[in-house]
Image 1 (cartoon, rainbow, N blue to C red):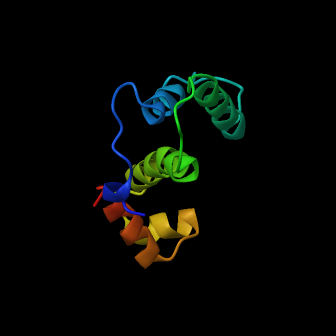
Image 2: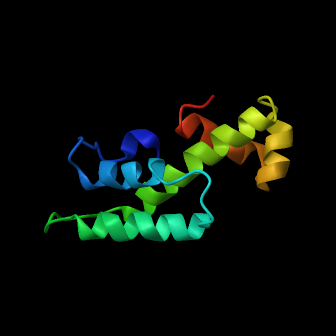
Length: 104
């Protein structure tokens, strides 16, 4: 699924609430990434108020994958070969994902 295939999120939509939960997580916390995701999902599901929800997997993956790619690319000074080694991805796969998230 490409970023353009993702459902459009409005400020009040459940997807934006999940994004806010991720972005508001404390930086210097002893909480693991896994715990942060669990907390964000618990908050997300607790505030649905009966709204239908689909594509949670894609939504969570996009919220985690995009900043991961962005940070690794910054760390490697945009060297895709080094970034692909760090991420354990084929360079072609990395390029595809960078395009998917408009990072290339």
